[in-house]
Image (cartoon, rainbow over all chains, first blue to last red; front, side, top):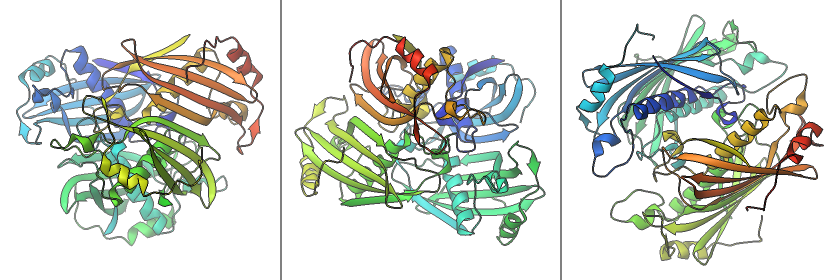
Amino acid sequence: VYCYEREVHVYETDLMGIVHHSNYLRFCEEARVDWCKRKGFLLNKKDESSDSAVYGLTVYETRVRHVAPIRYSDRIVINMQTRAEGIRIIFQYKIFVDKNLKSIVETVHCNLDLNFKVKRLSPELIKLVEKEIWTETWL
Amino acid sequence: VYCYEREVHVYETDLMGIVHHSNYLRFCEEARVDWCKRKGFLLNKKDESSDSAVYGLTVYETRVRHVAPIRYSDRIVINMQTRAEGIRIIFQYKIFVDKNLKSIVETVHCNLDLNFKVKRLSPELIKLVEKEIWTETWL
Amino acid sequence: VYCYEREVHVYETDLMGIVHHSNYLRFCEEARVDWCKRKGFLLNKKDESSDSAVYGLTVYETRVRHVAPIRYSDRIVINMQTRAEGIRIIFQYKIFVDKNLKSIVETVHCNLDLNFKVKRLSPELIKLVEKEIWTETWL
Amino acid sequence: VYCYEREVHVYETDLMGIVHHSNYLRFCEEARVDWCKRKGFLLNKKDESSDSAVYGLTVYETRVRHVAPIRYSDRIVINMQTRAEGIRIIFQYKIFVDKNLKSIVETVHCNLDLNFKVKRLSPELIKLVEKEIWTETWL
């Protein structure tokens, strides 16, 4: 299972002293983009000659379930799994701190062109996704 | 149906020229908090003598479905409905720009004390919620 | 003097229970953009045929002095003044809550084309700026 | 000279395709906090028994000069220097991408107690700062 980690910053907390719930989607985007980069698939890089790369993983749907709060200075570890389903690609994430599960997230993506019309998924991306192992469904 | 509106800011967009998907949860939080204020229910206001108000609507789960992109300078209009269900309160939101549906969101909340133990919902809050009309389920 | 106001949101605070210092620049951007709109000068609106509007007020330099903290739910009131100086436009802001000064900000802007080369300021924008009153220097 | 680095994320850009100017202050906070941690000085960690640590480096003033834009996926490298001056601590930062200077930042801090009254700087922190080398003034 692919794994991404980093520490939580002061500006990601709110007055409750914990990470604001909107930032979980940012953490997962970081993990997803990092996975794409490591696999050699360029994401969201604005390239006039190749719009297919630009909108290749537009966010269609997101779900976040909070299990326990995450605090400033915690080191989050994100496990990620992915699979293709028709014209969509699904990512699921488990966010841990010190091996304690803090949150489960799902993001569903499709491929849009510059006019936001849905296109087929990039075959290059599908190949990458098919090599991944989808264990059980987490959320 | 309760309604909240405001314009989209430059810093809420990303390099794709549209609102970053994490910001939809911030828009909905604004709407939810504004609703609480108008109803006289103080939310997340750190008050030493009354911790019940502090964590009264902790976010347990969120879902966002994106229908069409929102752009800088668009004026978003959010319709919101809410209902109680056991120890949870559920909010659903439809986000419009110029009467076109852009996104549907659901957030599920519970009441936590300062140690993040689940408590009963505030009776004051339940009364407010029960006065609201839940039309059909949007998401 | 031009005036912009709005309430502070939960997600703009951090674990200290006050507005995170980076968000002051976002408040001032909102005020600046709102001023441009009210004056009929379109800012940062990506328009292929008219790149002059796109990068018309690129941020060159910012300064923020914090006088007192701003908290969630505070209603900020921003006074703003502006003047042109050679190829630059300068904005200064005073941020108040309940008529108490909380912060003084300055942002300095220039006009960039799509390759980030400095260009002359838009004559349209200079005209708008010259109509404004610059009282004393605030910062 | 202390050095901090990391990649730029999608959500830190705006519709101009470059990093939003408010995020430079967040990058510098990350560098500053990381420096404190590596030196064993706990920052902004809410600890009931020791409020001195909580507000030890409250932001008093910030200045950012932009030299060239930073883009998504760039790897920023921040050089940082610090010195004490009376009741203030000053940090300066140079932000590079591929050894090209992109921005120069200064942040000025003081020590506040929980009521936001100015206190003396922590002697522990002053010792750390005095061990640092302040080369020339960058901004």
